[in-house]
Length: 359
Image (cartoon, rainbow, N blue to C red):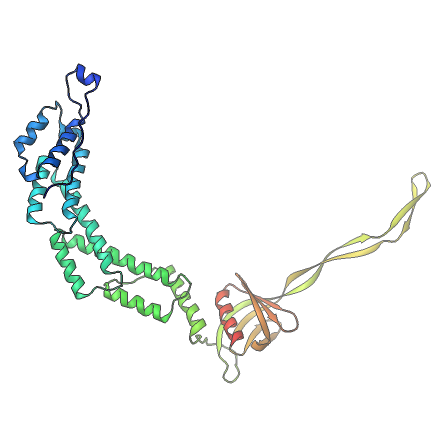
C-alpha cells in the first residue's frame, strides 16, 4: 500500500546556511516525507534512509521527534481507514517505525489511540438503539481482531460508552421532571441489554423518586398516607404535614395627622392655631399567623387540626391555589383565603390538590 504523503518543496538555504555551508534543518523532515511519498515503505531500505539523513549534521530523530511521530501517525491512520490491519500493513507499520526510530512506547500509544477512536465510533453506532444483537456482537469481536485492540481496552471502552448512553437516556427521560412507567421499563431494558448496573447516590435517588411521584400523582393512583385522625367513609388521605396557618389581615401600621390648619400672631412668640387636625390611619394587607398544627389533604377535603381550633375546607369549595416555595395559598369561593406555610414538599401538595380540584 502506497502511503498518502504529498511531495513538498525543499526550503531554500538562508544567508547563514550558505555562509556555514549547511542545509536548512527543516529539509530533513521534508526529504523524509518526500521519500515516503515516492516509494512504498517496504521498498525503502535502512541504508537508503540513513544515507539520506546523514548529510544533516545533527540528530534528526531527536530534533524532529514530534514531526516524525506525525509522519508515523499519518500512515497508521491510513491503515486504520478500512477498520482492518492486514498482515502486509502490519509489516509496513513495523518497518516505518524502525526507519523513523519511533520507540515502542510511542508506537503503542499511537496505535491504541487510533484503535480506540475506531472502536468507540463503531460501538456507539451499534448501541444507538439501546441493544446489541448477536450479529452486532460478532462484528465487534471481528473488529477487535482486525484492529488488534486488546480485550481489556475494548471492555473499558464499551463500559464507558454504555454507562454514558444510559445516563444520557435518563437525563432525557427526566427533562420534564417526570419519570413514567414506560421510561422506567425502557431504562431497565437498555441497562440489561448493555450490561450496565444502574446505581445512584442518595441525592440523585431522592430526586428520581420525586420525579417518579410527580408522574404517579398526575397519571396513576395517588399513594395513600396513614393518619391518626378519624376520616369519613371512603375518605383517603394523600398528604399530611405540620404547618403554620396564616391569613391576610388588614393591619394598621401608624397614625398620621392632617387637615387644613393655620395660625394667627397674638403677641411676640404667641400664636393662635386655627383649623382642625384629623387622624389618618395607614393600613396594609399582611400575612398574620392564626394558628399552628397539622394539615391533612384527602380526596374530599383539606383538614387543619390546630392548637386553637380545627377547620376543614371541602375540595369543591376551592377555586384555585397559589403555590410558593414554602407553602400554598388556598383560593376559596367565599371567605378569607388561608395560607398554609410548611417546608415538607409544597410542590407535591400542590400537584395532588390540583388534580383533586380538576377531577
